[in-house]
Length: 478
Image (tube, rainbow, N blue to C red; front, side, top):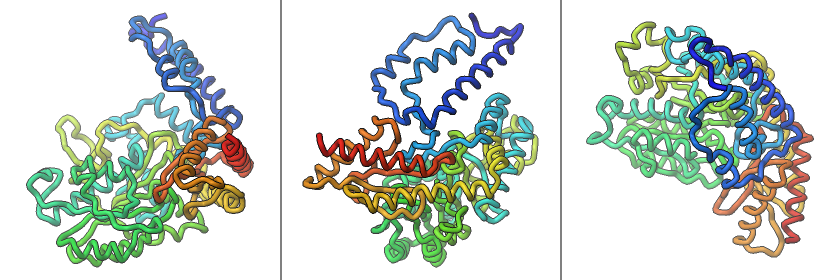
């Protein structure tokens, strides 16, 4: 069967939508029972998709069915309740519905003229997110594809501001031949911020990294570093270090930055840490964040909306606008403050605000507060179990939703212990009952569990604990 033709272009649409709904329903509703990780090899997946470019088409439902057959061995239940790797989150029902309708309607989320509904939805979402995280109402808020691009947005505004203090316009003049824009952060700066700095031409290697002996930046060392810089500076703080979830003292960082004689732009990477604001037990970790100049966060993590989705907050509109605005005659129409392209790198944009709007509408602020508290209960219950269980240990504090730990097998030196933990990560993933990710913390292999899925319960945590115990016992006997 050939694809729909121009005479009746929508003949396949209803059938395709029904097929997608049925397939998604079957997969999603089996997340609690299906293996979380998949043991498929690269060669097997490559072979599954190693066919020639099709010359003749098929119906959309047939194409979907064929993809599902080929892909099924490699589909990971990363949106399910026992996926604890990295910080991936899940998908609320409201977010799923909103994302489906976003794809179906295919609205261009940039210009008011191209989709008043999509653009106004994003303006509403921006207002809700500022209220949710207690960010001043006069800040700019925009959705992005994730924390990497959120860092890009905030750091672009910071680059523009610092450059203008130095007497040039980075967006118009470029960086070549102009004064260096210094960047200061801790040794724990996240790779997404480093990546953004590289794209912005500020240099991945140019970051002045201050010691962070306990995961949080050393304020005395920061003060000394800034004192060595003659001119304005861009400071990057962490609200939730990636391995342990440790927070920089934001008030301390900002106090030091504000005292810098030539001024400083403070950007906070809060990819998942921003959600500490939603619990009375952790909100103090973010004290002072509203004093920063820009903030980056993810929506596809703890907000539990589909990939890819993030958001950024910027205090000053002008440097952000001057960094990204690019007027074009063919795009003229609505007032610039209505269009979204002047505040983000992309001009073509998915209408990400729809899924966020539907999820927040479904959950409400109270629902998200309760979800964050459940995640904290799950994380801290697991951390407490690790502390009491023989043969394992915490290797970092667990102030939020990240638990960093490792096996401590008897009779092995550090090198062998590191290998034991790397083997354990692979064994847990292959077991299929739960999924964890490996890391390196303070120079040694560790295991990292993140608790940020709205469906995870203490029963799922108990299963994780059983897996940890079983895999440890199995590896000790091999």
